[in-house]
Length: 443
Image (cartoon, rainbow, N blue to C red; front, side, top):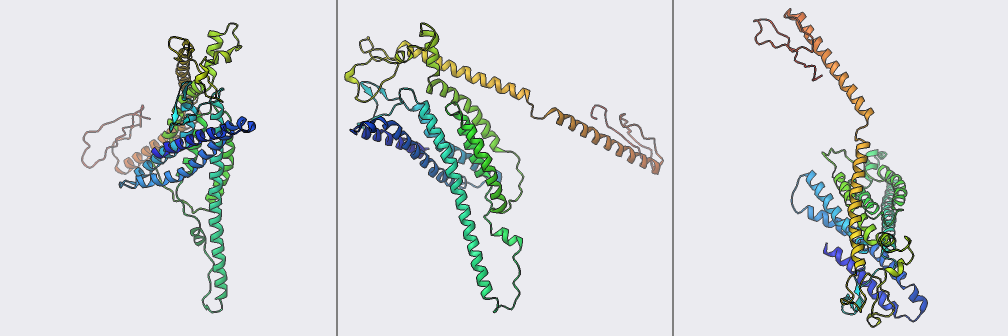
């Protein structure tokens, strides 16, 4: 966890230093594109750090799980949980920083500095939503493309290496064929299968899909095209995995499991995504402040004058050159200069109210969908009932036939119908009594 936070902080320091260096560039074109350049390079650096640390965290999760002996099921569950926890934190930490923590840079005259000389970075005047969208799209798409392609290339290279070694072995065998009097048997299928890559489980495949689901669901409000890109990636991925499992990996052994831990993880991500999207819409975007201005402060019910309303007065002596300031604060001539204004508290109350409303609305809609779409369809329930009735009728017929056969052999008491419960406490010596205890309600 400390390494993950350190990596995020290191990229933040990189962006801060690059902004300071590029701001001193005398070229006006370079100054105009400094924010986009620094943001893009920082996102690429974040993506590379995420890819590297993901492999490291996978090995750390295995090492942590092997510290204590466990059963096979417990080992698999705890390994999956540790891997998911570390890899998800590694993948989502840079995005959470941009969505909820970036922008707390202070105010004119009281800025937050890093290492004493570098001012903490802040969002652009339109907000952090656009930067969040860019960062999410680049990390999500880059992680899928690079990770999938790199792994596929590694598997292909291993396969080529094995093929080259086999060809060399055939050549040596052909050269020594004259010296060897024994007949060379053709290679059997199990020999060919053994030369394939060993099967290491489907946990990496599931982990990839779960992390992708986190990218799609946790921040879909900032990047609505994420589900479309995920669908396109999965359409291609399913064919690549099919070819990989059939032609390049040994056949796996069938193992039964009592439950699926991934289901609990997906349910947790789904519930947490409602909260994160509510906060993204409420605090990261300008949706709530615009609505507050339109219905509370606008004279004609339009957005005219919103930009001026979102700005605050300040003393130019406290304003650093080449920067902008956007906030809801009292002017410097007020009794409490630069304190949060009434508009700020109105916007904050509206944002919190929106979070509560959004969360409850999502919960009600999910309950409605669960009620409308049952887990077991009605046609399947009716078919199961028919099968159970047919099975019970078959068992009753078998019982009646067995009872009749017993009576014909022993000439004992008559056999009663199956829906009548007869209890015989003591049978005459030398005779067998037929008891049928099936109740009608049990049928």
